[in-house]
Image (cartoon, rainbow, N blue to C red; front, side, top):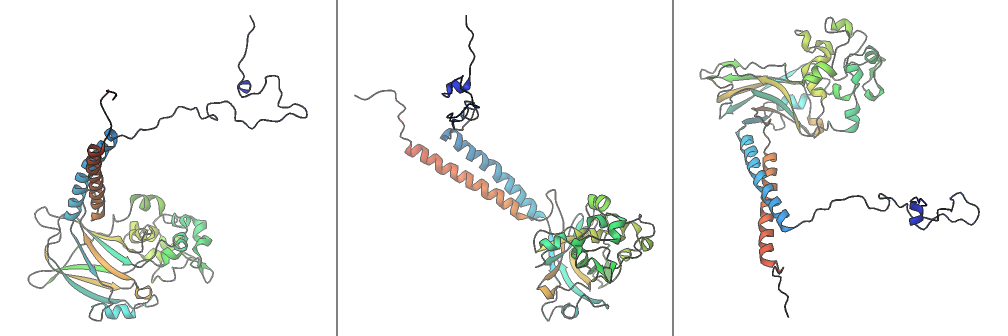
Length: 370
């Protein structure tokens, strides 16, 4: 018996005796090899869309998304939020004079007070934010204008910052700490909140300034050079950013764990926003008693040390008080999006069901007409 072997080239019309390395006159075939991949014979699965599969899918999506959307929307509406603009654009605004005279070069702080009323009490912990509008922190040059090695406490980067920080890298040959446009534009307004009781006296609301930054930022990404013991010595030979009124080691001298590069106000600002209108966490008002609200309804006064100029780029400043829930802050869009998608799917399911039963002309009978 003579044994035979299979050759894919023979099936494609190539004799087994022909050599690809042959002499003159041999034409190499352009036909693909006889393999499952090149001949497109790999196993495949293709869904067949029928009324029995499409209609239940639409109804299931609708029945799942609509209740989830309603739950998200109701939860968002239960979050209490109060917002007040203190830019001082209008002449009758208490901060109009401060806004007109505010600039980066001012050394004398300007103060103003804004009165407001809370119609409903705020329960649980209350979060105080500052908000800016028309401020493009997402600009490419702005986002890159920082030195993460310097912010992480590197000595070499402290004295020789990255060139990405230009033109806020050095001043008169002295390295800037922290360098870059992000740090140079640090938000530096001071906000204080007071409750006006029935006697007309002002009661200061305690504002917690620690715990507002991400844990990873506070303990991993940002570190002081040489530890937190003597920051004046650690930052010796560096200059403050151009628009700052004090050096980085004086951001919070009373608390070594919140001073220098690990200052939480500074860390929060360094996490750039994606949109030109944004808010950043400023303080936390913690609930002390389960029987009394954190912020009772009534009259309040917001005292502002107006340092941050925004009129030059047509910006706006605001203060926001807000509670949170398991889904975060107030955001009705997510609930509306779920309800919209679920309603559209359910509506399409009903329409396709009607079309299917009205125009389905398939003959289920096996009889063959004469």
